[in-house]
Length: 134
Image 1 (tube, helix red, strand yellow):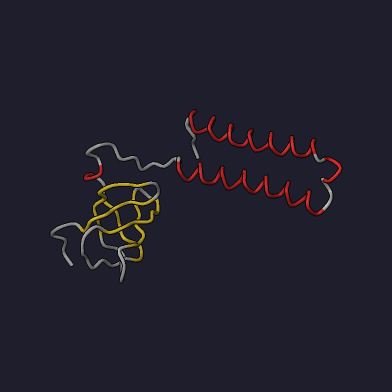
Image 2 (cartoon, helix red, strand yellow; image 1 turned 45 degrees about the horizontal axis):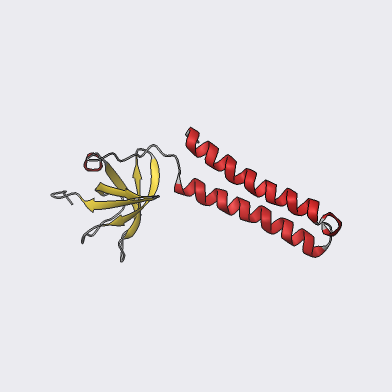
């Protein structure tokens, strides 16, 4: 995984902030650290740190799929699952598996090709390729 400088410093700042909170709590409550309540508080701080880091990584997830203005219409994807009774499924683009939401009505099966219309976070919006042979 390759992180940009901004992403790296953001993650480092979040982890440092949580580590500082944990260190301050330990210094303040050192006599209670090995009691059940103290261990739960320390564990809660660590879990909160991990959750925050995970959410930040998900929000700023580095990927090979970047959509510049006008570029979405140039990407095609292959359906690998889903899209049966709902508009949700999975597609593969440039070797990466993505969650996808279908725009418009279509009956898609695994192996069908779709156009990538947009990206929101870790979800691609796709549309059936017009005039495809079945």
